[in-house]
Length: 104
Image (cartoon, rainbow, N blue to C red; front, side, top):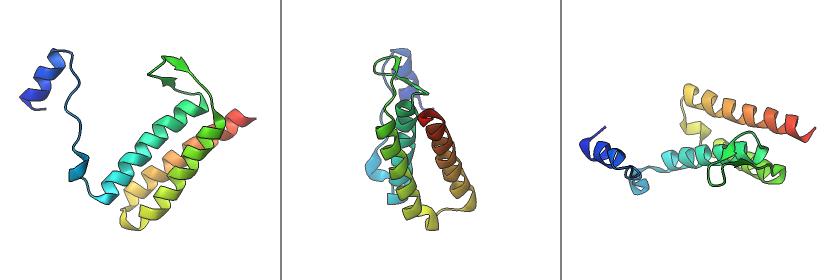
């Protein structure tokens, strides 16, 4: 961590955001997958929403988020190594299983 980040953390400020313009398309898609994944967990009702500090369940939005993740992974998987593919497949499987458990 650089000294600028340490100084901002000591002052209680957020660290500088990532410059997304420096990311290639695959990195951007992977970042979006991670954001959608986190939101899907919230919509499934298994993670606290940091904005409200409450558990909120919206399974129709969870389904949309999961479907988007599946679609994005299909678009980039040919350019990923096996470890990255397995990681993304595990994310999808975990989300799908937990979603299925919640709709029972």
